[in-house]
Length: 95
Image 1 (cartoon, rainbow, N blue to C red):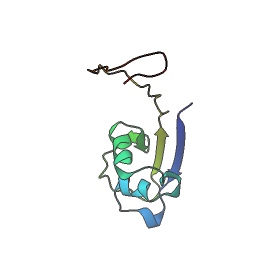
Image 2 (image 1 turned 30 degrees about the horizontal axis):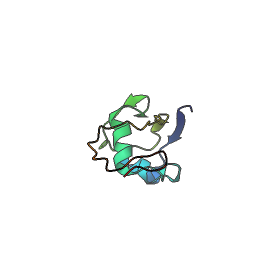
Image 3 (image 1 turned 45 degrees about the vertical axis):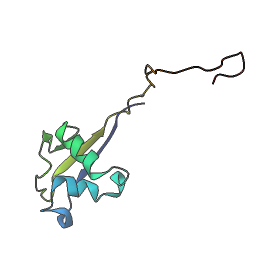
Image 4 (image 1 turned 135 degrees about the vertical axis):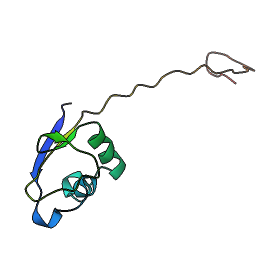
């Protein structure tokens, strides 16, 4: 799976609000929580005019915001050691 990138310009109605709030309000990113958007800003996946900004940056009309959503990492289950008392075990059942 590849990284998803989107770019948009800040409209006049959005000017003066925080960067994280601006992105949260967009329909394209409605599936992301505000905390996830803040993580993306902090990690540099969201930039304004080609520069990383803080989540509290107040956007301006005409700012070009680029959002690069990294590919999800595949999570593999990890075994954990367990202490079990086995009372009975055969080919069909373990108790």
